[in-house]
Amino acid sequence: MQFNSLSFMIFFPVVLAVYFVIPRKLREIWLLLASYYFYMNWNPRYAVLIGASTLITYISGILMEKCRGLQSKSRKKGILVLCLVSNLGILALFKYGNFALETADRILEMLGISGGGRRLDLLLPVGISFYTFQALGYIIDVYRSDVKAERNLVRYALFVSFFPQLVAGPIERSGNLLAQIRKVPEMELWNGKRITSGAILMVWGFFMKMVIADRAAILVNTVFDNFRVYGSTELCLAAVCFAIQIYCDFGSYSAIAIGAARIMGFQLMENFNTPYFAVSIRDFWARWHISLSTWFRDYLYIPLGGNRKGRGRERLNKMAVFLVSGLWHGASWNFVLWGGIHGMYQVAADVLAPWKEALCRKMKIRQNCFSWTFLKMAVTFVLVDFAWIFFRANSVMDALRILKRILLRPTPWLLFNGGIYELGLDRGEFGILMIALLCLLLGDLIRYMKKVTIDGFLMEQNLWFEWLAVILLVTAIFVFGEYGPAVDAQQFIYFQF
Image (cartoon, rainbow, N blue to C red):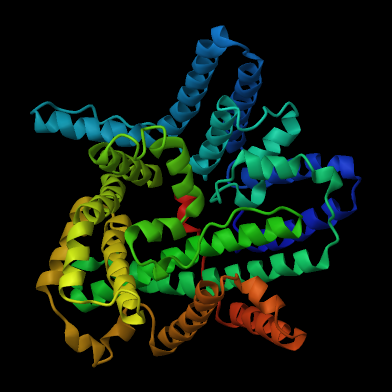
């Protein structure tokens, strides 16, 4: 069940109506049933995997907490290892099984040996990477004694499967979401300010998804799926549009998830904070998919040694984290290379930092002014967008071919002869996209300069202005949203991860 579907528009109000009126003691059970129903709408068999992950980590947490004293330290570590191996094993089998077989076949072919060519007949469960990492974060927290093991299976199962953020995040921490679930019977549900805030966030999310992301996707798919017939202008435009598409697509899911949870009384962590206003790659990752980047920081980078074992080890750890992050995003070498590119960006920034400072001093460049900040934003966006090409391409070779055509097939005349309106979006549709992007830019500027999200900003205004803004957004969704009988609801990009 997708957020931008009629079924969700029926499902969510029904869940809310029941949730707000049933006895307090039944709220957790109702949300758990609703979450499993939400997830099983894709495939009922998926419930077996999420249930297995839930039971393994639930039992492991209780067993670890029973381990007392120094003699039990090795037993506690053994339970953790078994839990990690079993959960990551399930993830690896369903997500990376065929990728491993294909890679093995290629290596054998390079050695002159005929590969087996066998493939696993497995369907990738939607959102498996998200709920697996959320469950593993919990079990590592229990191992570190950062949180107490949850003894109530209903509460813990709800923590793993909470439907607003189940299939595409934010990847929640047990110290935040599980702590709130434990207080569900005492939650104040009828809070008008909180409900309004959540509703505005949901509307903003639908606007980002249906008016911007799905419209940009038409141009992106037209060009990337037929890149061999296009030149530099079309491919560069498609790359920029993909940067917009993936931000609005993934950012919209997070906004809708956070808004839906807020209406029910839950506060989920922020997942995006104006990422394209970042002034460095490091700053970008502090603003993009925050729940994942902080997860890797806390559960992989720091355990590997972080920056505590010298500069060389620190840079190696960064490369390892970003390569794993690339693999997390997809079972393909282009995702791994995408992660590696971001890792190299970070390492290069560390190595070149003294040279950059020396050059700025020698050339007397002012670094505390708008022009310098804007230049850093522009360079960061170009670097990020370059890496997005590898993310969007179907393979590493396709990405390299696209870059070759960008360099060797200049087509600047398309900017003046109307050729850009023949890439899936006509002049009118392209104009709608530009106007919608101005609205997005305004929203992000407010977030960047005033340090307040769109819902907070609107709720600070006079009531007429708040309602006018919401009505205009809703109208734009219904009038200009990409939906209807002739248009399939575009699946959120991160569902595949």
